[in-house]
Length: 225
Image (cartoon, rainbow, N blue to C red; front, side, top):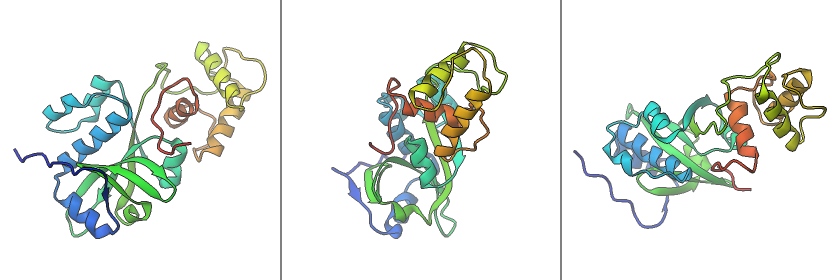
């Protein structure tokens, strides 16, 4: 078993893509994934002690052990900033050096804090040519809501949704246990303002966005206010 790399003290500053390529090429795909997973779990303030025993960072296992679901998306940094969760980025190294994972922990201006064996600070532009645009977000469904809610849905969850959309300034009118036209309109407005497909359906990306916006749910933030 290869020894785990010892992280350096303080963040590592990387200013050229070549340095990042060299850094990541010393890790296997599995090692890079494990290190990235550790950072994301820590951003949720979860204990990562058990991770050492993992041969592979399996997202289904994470879901069971940590009650976090994974959401995979293709997009750009703007989309990630809107969803506002730390994420794993899939990195493709040049010259057939393979795929690696890197955690994007936080963004401040044009600089990002990333997580691997070390905490890495670097300009966001460095990952531009290496990131495949695939990202995975770990998120928590605090209320165990149905997978999707759409027009015609009936149930108490519709009232929960209307109440919280009202809190955020999107829903007007009386709350009712029916997902009707007003709920659809409010949902489309939330989606449009946050670069999500505006179909008026409350599904995964709208769900994790809503939890992130509501003060009462404790979610890690990619971009600090």
